[in-house]
Structures are given as C-alpha cells and as structure tokens.
Length: 143
Image (cartoon, rainbow, N blue to C red; front, side, top):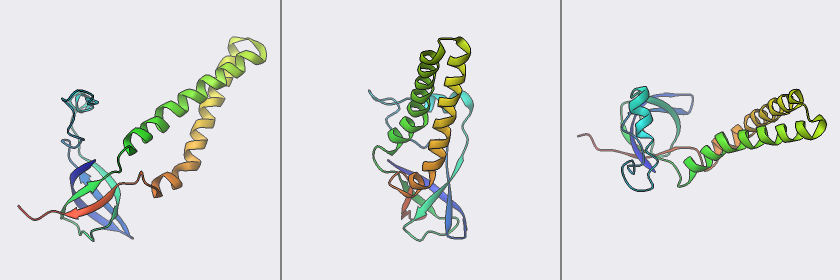
C-alpha cells in the first residue's frame, strides 16, 4: 500500500510524517474493501503522525510517498485483535477446567489477556524493525 504524506520533522535519525485523513488503500467502495473510511467519518477525520524509515533522504516539508508492505496491515490486525482474543479465551477455558467456577474463568481470562499484552510488548522491537515498518520511498515533485 502506498500513501502520500508530508515530512514534518526529523529528530535523531527518526523521520516523522503526517498522513492526512484521505489515506488508505483506495478500495473503500470496491467489493472486498474494508470500508475503514466509515470509521474515520464517524469519529472525525484527523491527520496522524508516524515514524518511518527514510529511504529517499527527505527533509521536513517534502511531500513524499510512504509504502507499507503488502499484507502488513492484515498481520498487524491479526496480532492486535486475534492474539489477545485467543489468549483471553484460552485463559478462560483453562480457568474453567481448573475449578469450573466463574471466578476462575475471570482470573484465567485476565491472565490470558495480560499474557498477550506482555507478548506483544516483547515483540514490539522486532515488529517495528521488520517488514511491517512503513518506509518513505519517494519524494514527490512540488505541484
């Protein structure tokens, strides 16, 4: 996925871009599109800032193209939603199998959720340095 953005600042080898509310894959109204633009319309359109890998040596003020690897959004969604829910349900099941009481199900659910948070927290460096990290790949010509 490629999206237009503007470089807003560079600080200690970190490049930050601002992506406007129109950003997305462009498949919002197509069959199979995720329609995530509807959430932006409901909750209000906001510009967002992201740290990106600067492969094009862009400077603050440049209009640029930011690229995210194919499938990275799906992998991020799976990690953010499916992993915590899976561990929450696994914890609830384990709690039920231990004593069969409601309190043990609640404790197991909370422990499963806490484990998923700790697991994701431990994976954050590897994930942010890998293929899921957005890259600034091109500087656009001034219009």
